[in-house]
Structures are given as C-alpha cells and as structure tokens.
Length: 264
Ligand SMILES: Cc1cc2nc3c(=O)[nH]c(=O)nc-3n(C[C@H](O)[C@H](O)[C@H](O)COP(=O)(O)O)c2cc1C
Image 1 (cartoon, rainbow, N blue to C red):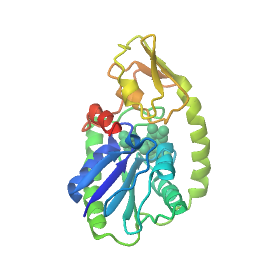
Image 2 (image 1 turned 135 degrees about the vertical axis):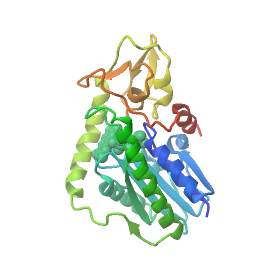
Image 3 (image 1 turned 120 degrees about the horizontal axis):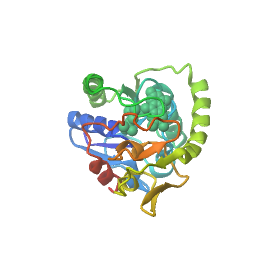
C-alpha cells in the first residue's frame, strides 16, 4: 500500500505525527505542501493523507490553497485527513477539507484528530516537558489506532461525525483569518537578534526579508508562528505577548528538517 502524506507544520507537531504514521504504514512518502509551490500534484499512491494543525477551528490558508490549486487525485485513491490541535477544532477543520475536496470531485474517505501541545503563544507559553511528554504518549497511541484504520481503508470513517458548532466556528474562522494578516504587524525584534536568518528560512510563505540585518515582515503571513517560536535567541517578539513567555518547538523535530522539506 503506497502512501503519500502531504503536511503543513509551523512548529513540528504535524511533521512528528506524519513520521509516526509513516512508520506504522510503511512504504510512505512525506511531502511538505510548501514544496509544491504552484505545481499541479498528481500523487501516484493508493492512499493520500492531508495533515495539518488546526487554526481557529479551521484549516490553515496554505492547506486551502494546496487543495484548491495543487492537488489532483484519481478516483481510486483512498483519501484521508489528519488534524492536530491543542484543545478543539478538529471536526470543523475536517469539514472544511471535506468541502474543498468535494468541490473538486474528490471524496474524503476518513478524518482523524489528535491533540498535541499548543503553539499559540498569544494565549500561552509552552507547557512543561512532562506535560508535553504525556501528550506525546497519548498521540502516539492514537496514531497506532489510526494507522490500523487506514490500512483497512473503510469507505467512510470520521472520528466525530457531527459538527454541531460548525456554523459558529466558521464565522470565527473567517474573522480570525482576516485579522491574521494584521497581526503580523505586531511582530518586532529586540536586541537579542544575531541576524542568523533562521526566521527567513523557516517562513513557509517567504514573508520575511532581512533589512539592515533585521527581519521585516510583509503581509503574506500564514500565522504559523514558526519565526517567533524557532528563533534561537528569542529575539522575535509580538506586541501584547510577554517577552519571556516560553517558546514551543516540537522536541523531536530538527528545524533544519522542516526547512529542507519546504524545498522538496
Ligand atoms: C494561528 C493558530 C491558530 C490556532 N488555533 C487553534 C484552535 O482553534 N484550536 C486548537 O485547539 N489549537 C489551535 N492552535 C494550536 C495548534 O493547532 C497546535 O498547537 C498544533 O499542534 C501546532 O502544529 P504544528 O507544530 O505542526 O504547527 C492554533 C495555532 C496557531 C498557530
């Protein structure tokens, strides 16, 4: 069973899940959607997975673009999606993916959700390592059961069938995503900046440029927070967020792997 997993990840959680799943499924290729650029993607596989973090109860803009502009799937391919989130939003995010795929005549056969540590620093800093580890144990177990389901390829499997709050969460998603673009203007750099340029490399939308050895942001922000979270000297800050708030990066992921994946 040849599988291709397309993923998007800001701080490594989704890549970690993709790797765990690939190990369970065998014969699996992992591709960062950022590497697809503007090209049409026609996966030659029995199973295709779309993996992403939940943003404001929905799917990141980059996942919408990937499905709308890049992905072309043949009829007999088994398609599933796997979301991950800090506390809530899996069902509505999957519903978005289902709608986007359906508009292209692609059936979403299965949908899953896995809780992971939060990376949304405007709300809170990273949890203690102990708490993170407990979450990783639970998510690894969930991935084992998800892999078993995918291997069986049931015609329809959704980990939560109904989405009674989807109407409300969709409104919230639209408002949040519009606000996103403006939030990037709250970013600033303090004197810790060493001009290492990691933020430029890790930005999935190439929205950061170095000007006079300082990062500056354009308006094409995905809100993944990768620049802020991976900055090795905690130099990237956001107005309204305490400067010393603990950063989150998935401890099992090397930022260089994330960057390499973005270039295919
Ligand atoms: C912009 C943004 C919005 C988020 N919105 C939600 C949300 O609505 N519900 C939730 O449970 N987690 C939310 N999160 C947390 C992430 O979904 C979660 O931490 C995820 O595991 C991050 O994955 P990554 O490391 O692959 O980027 C949000 C994170 C970001 C950056």
